[in-house]
Amino acid sequence: MNDLKKFCVIGFFVTTVLGILSHFVYDWTGGGFLVGLFFPVNESTWEHMKLLFFPMFLFALVAGKRMERQYPCIYNAMFTGILVGLALIPTLFYTYSGILGFFVDWVNIAVYVISVLVAYLVVYRVAMTCKNKDSKVLRIVMYVLVAAFMIFTVYPPELGLFQVPPTEGKR
View (cartoon, rainbow, N blue to C red):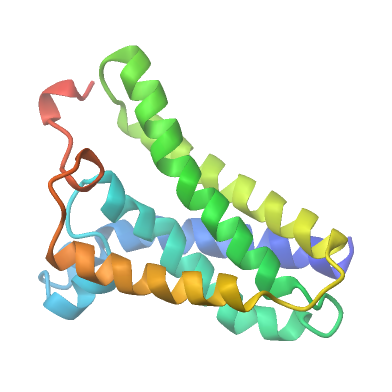
């Protein structure tokens, strides 16, 4: 297995485990304000997107440094993977729950795991094929997302993505 495959496999497991644990951190810590900026504070789809974003972003910043000499686009690849994973979470959730008319916890977990898996497949593909250094635009987008997660946690818009789905729809 080459170094990039190892990196992606380790990243997949680190992101998946940290994301699953992150689901409970807000409650475990008594719901502190600062904790809520980085961990889900409710069951909205937006808050659940933090489960992928922050663990994968942290992995990119910490582990990506080891890979950038061999794969100069590793940050570009990681940030692209994050964006794809973030887009998949609401797409898959609203598609399956819209078709069924209800949602199921184990399917929600599967949506998360599939989103992380696809994100790292994108990381691998982009890092293997990219010839240029990282995009400053993607770096800016990542920092805008950090700010957006914090702002919209404190001031969620009146849009479905930011609202807690009704529990009556759950099965």
